[in-house]
Length: 127
Image 1 (cartoon, rainbow, N blue to C red):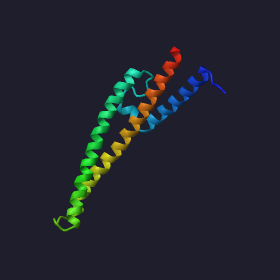
Image 2 (cartoon, rainbow, N blue to C red):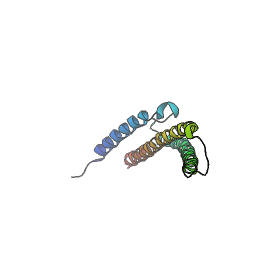
Image 3 (cartoon, rainbow, N blue to C red):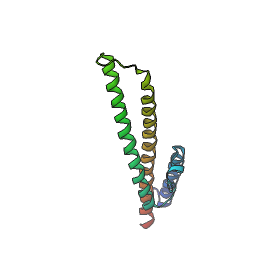
Image 4 (tube, helix red, strand yellow):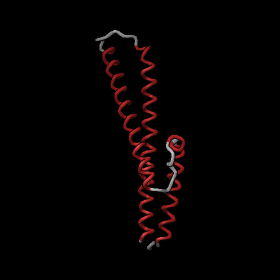
C-alpha cells in the first residue's frame, strides 16, 4: 500500500511536533532562541551553538571525573592521605557537568532529528 505525499507530509509534521515537545522538555527553548522555528538554516546555526556547548560539557565532565577517580584511587591505595570529605564539592561539579552534558546531548540529537525531518519535508514539497 503506497502512501501519497500528503500523508507523508502529515506524518513528518506530526514527528516535528513531537520533536518540538521534546525540545521544550529539555529546557532548550529559553536557552537557545529559535529552537522551535521551522527554518533549516537558522536551526543549523542553533545546532552549531548547541554542539559547542555539548563539547564543553563533555570535556569538563570527563576531565573532572578523571581527576576525581585519580584522587580516589591514590587515596584508596594509600599513596596520599587526604580526607575525601572535601571531595564533595568536586562531586557537585561532576554531577552538574554530567547533567549539563545529558541535557545538551538530548537537545543536540532532537535538533538533528528536526533538521532532517524539515529538509525531508522540503524535498517532498519541491517534487
